[in-house]
Image (tube, rainbow, N blue to C red; front, side):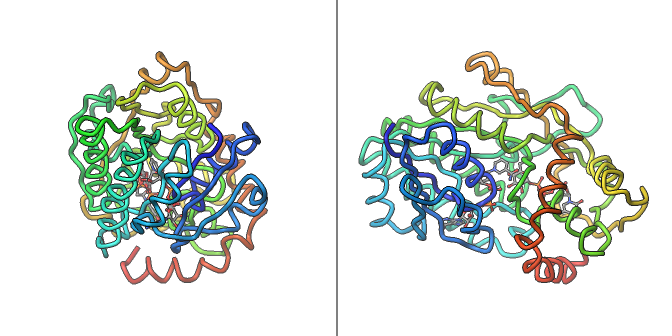
Length: 334
Ligand code: NAD
Ligand code: DAU
């Protein structure tokens, strides 16, 4: 591969992936297509932008632009999305437009120019698992049962990719990953919201009982998994990515409080998310067995400490957004 196109590369996971590839393969030209919505930040890329890494500000729904960029690339790694469940419950329109129409636009172009396509998706397409059956996990054969407008739009995009593989021979793979954490994650999301609440003198906010379970994976382990699938995965296959990192939200919050030297009860319980998925858990045996991928960040507490340090050291990266994000949550009693 001489040139890859990364959509959504100014967001959390896309920018981490761009750093990952730029470091591992400096010979590959990276073109990033990103609309720079509220979730995209060109500062996520400043240290790699240059001769080999280019940012094109634009929309994945823009057919002529997408055709031009796809034509010039050897492979497309598709991260661009509206990604936050809470936003999708208030205003779903942009989720339908970007996640469904945007994916359609990209796979049409990838089919037209016969380009390798990797679709980055989420475990949320499978809905949730019961809290009291902790041996059950999502597998590539799990039924699609999305619960929110966000996960329904991602499920729709997966279905489009699957149909294009079968009907038009699109050279594609799909990955469905669990909850990521690490640097550059927008402060609307659970872990950075709580860290930056504490750093800005606010109290952390836990939805409902706090018993909901998420399966945490460090974003660098996700980047490595995507690279392995892109370069060695079987066309037409779906790979589930997760690092056996199941924890309740309450336990994660208590760990943040402990690491940031706060009292264990120094948080507020706020209104629960409507339709709140109970538990996610990934069976990643397919990617482990077939591609030999394995997570390197196996100690969640030290990964979390590194993440806390990153937000402490990069206050200028998040401070200007903090009031706005918290005002939006406050309007929703969260
Ligand atoms: P993010 O919200 O941090 O970043 C999304 C990026 O897409 C932003 O830079 C934004 O500007 C860009 N974008 C949005 N609409 C666009 C459009 N119409 N055209 C071009 N660019 C557009 O999201 P993230 O958390 O980095 O997630 C990236 C991908 O990974 C998403 O597809 C998401 O569904 C998937 N995913 C996320 C997680 C997670 O834990 N965050 C887990 C599994 C899968
Ligand atoms: O599973 C993968 C998904 O993980 C991705 O597809 C999504 O893009 C990503 O946003 C994430 O979805 P979640 O809804 O699980 O993540 P979020 O960070 O919004 O919330 C994590 C959990 O924490 C969830 O159970 C809701 C809860 N929560 C969230 C916030 C923002 C709180 O208790 N308090 C909060 O303030």
